[in-house]
Length: 80
Image (cartoon, rainbow, N blue to C red; front, side, top):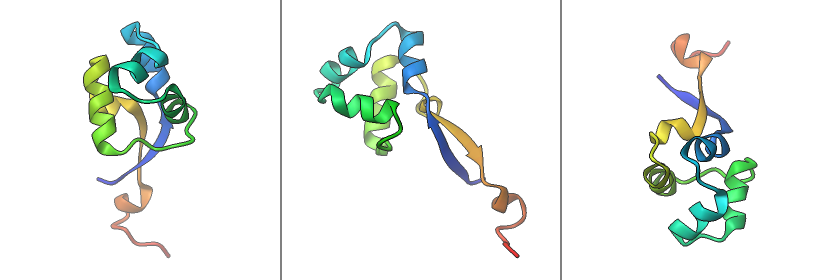
């Protein structure tokens, strides 16, 4: 099944882990602005970064974004 990325859930995962965006930036040697860009949906996390973030805060990488099933896939990918 194909998915579209929805809203970034990084802020929620950070709150659940008791960590801050500033802590995450420091842990991964990023500028805090980069982390805030992910949180505010200004940038999409590349897979390598998403894996590193998930590892740092102790969540599954798939939990970092809302995953929206692609309706076209359910219809065999056909658009009329």
